[in-house]
Image (cartoon, rainbow, N blue to C red):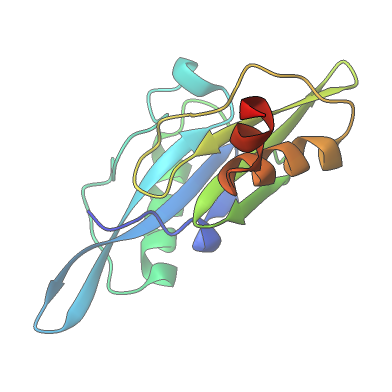
Length: 146
């Protein structure tokens, strides 16, 4: 599997559709996708790869396939966008969440949906994003070592 194309991800009805290049055939890229769910592990589709078992010929095509599968098979539909505060930095996906006026984040590396986030709370979205950026740039490590 190539890296997850977080920059082309689409939030849809409580799910985040994340395309990636599954392979190549005669120099044509074949696309697949993975899903994240707003309700996390409570969803059968959280961190699942291509539950529709259908592949696409473009990013738009695979997103359409994923949306159709969600429309038919989703166990819940969210009308809020829990993935609206998502950012891509150095090919990493950062999702900022707010609860009780505190911010925290989920951090997914380019090649997998393993959450690398530290259990840390922040006062603002900016503070949270700055912390993640410094960590990805290696600045948090250097500060601790001094």
